[in-house]
Length: 324
Image 1 (cartoon, rainbow, N blue to C red):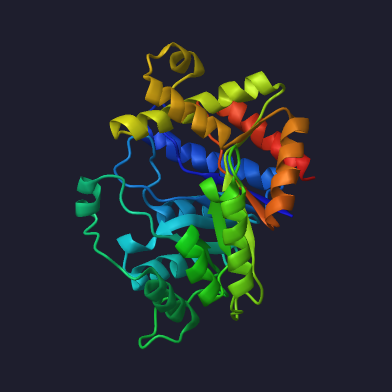
Image 2 (image 1 turned 90 degrees about the horizontal axis):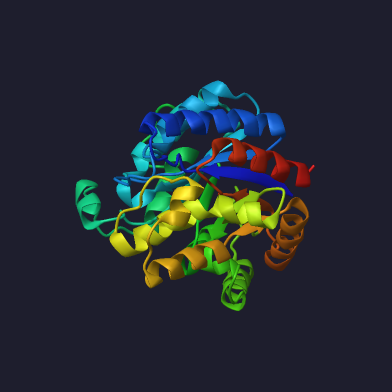
């Protein structure tokens, strides 16, 4: 069982945005020391609460600061890019971290209409783009990409319902999260979708059999109450994003507690908290064991964030300890 971290370079109130990027690199260094198998970053554009807009560039900094941990994107949003450009970026990255680079690909649209316009986003065929990208990386495209990657560069699909179908057809491993996991809700639809992925999976040279990773917020503290506090900054940002259209930087727990909120915002805050796993080490171990058993996942991608960087580092260490 592999455990990895996903860091979205969350900004924090009162802190310069570049500090979020430096914090991501520092967290990757700690993750390697703690024995994590993989460190993921993500792609967001025009979001005040997230500084991670350029995964390939950020991963180059992570590669330079680490030496053994696998590094990857979870993910690059393929509708924003030409497949050739993505292939070239990650092949270049592999020159500095040979055998350690993973390319996770998704298709989420830009957060707002102005962002989508700025990205020149148009309707695209995600499956066709994945196939084209794979041809570039394997040297089977109509043009030869340069530089050639140093060794295999595995692809992963960030999948929802239809994304699971595409991943099964193309023989790709998947990373799933959100409602598909059924955390804090009904697990049946997600389990049915995962069963369909495994049932219809077509083996590929990269992946001879179905493979699933699950991604969700995981935070650990000494007590359940303290862990619930760690969840508040992220949950409050999600609530604001859903109701105001602006996903803000993380705020201190005390500021979140005292903030005025509408009933709708309170509902979103509670929903976000319910979709996470947070608590004492024993509580988190129990809930994760149940989730991993239910989904048959081969990897846990822990995506938790909170305002307090020291508390986040402690949570990361506790999670690593659970997996030995």
